[in-house]
Amino acid sequence: VLEIDLDDDRLDDTDVLRVGVKGTSDATVSFQFTSCRSEYLSSDSIQGIVLDHSYAFYNVAPHSSKRSAAASTTHLEITLVSLSGTPFLYVSDTTVAPTRNMSPTQVPWKSEEQGTEQSITIMNPTGSYYIGVYGHVGGAFRVSSRTVEHDNDSSDDNLVVIIVPIVCVVLLFAVIVSLAFSNKVRREWLGPRCPGVDWLQCREEREARRLRRESTRSFSPGSTMELKPSHSASNFA
Image (cartoon, rainbow, N blue to C red; front, side, top):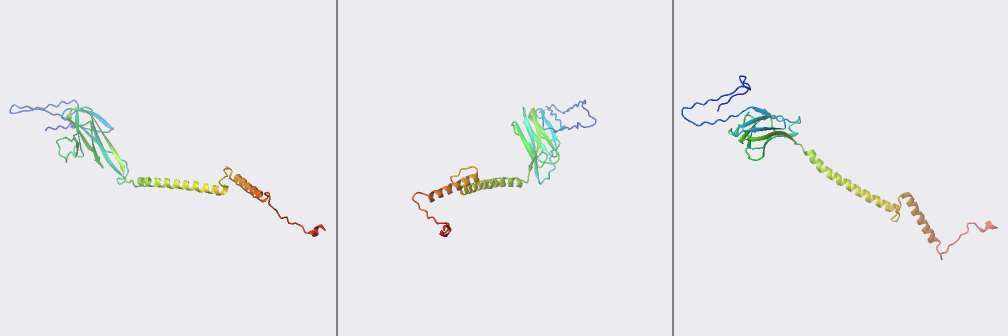
């Protein structure tokens, strides 16, 4: 394997690299050129093209809020979408240019699914991560990353979920009891046959009807009334 550092000060974008092979006997030789230049994945997603059995490399530094680690859990999601061909995904936190032939220590995360979309999730990421896209079958792809945070302390949310229904039930019970009590008081105060809106007026009319009924019973036909003189006979002498 021949590796050339393209960031070498002796090279620039106009230089042409030539490779020669010398053999002691006739042989068939194949070449595979792979650029290990890593592009920073700064936007939400980057679209690229990879040739058959070649690589494209990226790097990403997950960002998180300033909340404490005890208050939240962070995970990094790296997603590879195949637009054409069959790309594979390799991720490392130590190897700048992760490839499919490296050991699991060098490339802890990889996805070799032959589907439209594949992703890798890294829990509690720290530092930078390096992405290698391998063209098992060359084609176009889109690679993206995002940092997701989850609250660890969900006790307050659970408490709200429990308390809110209880408070609603208590308030509903209080409203029902209040309505039942007010109806009972109104029946006792106004009577069952007093549908008046003005309670005081309705109460006075009910009291007047009661007095009229008592007067009618006192002077009904056939009744006798004993009259007692209010003055003695000596007053008329």
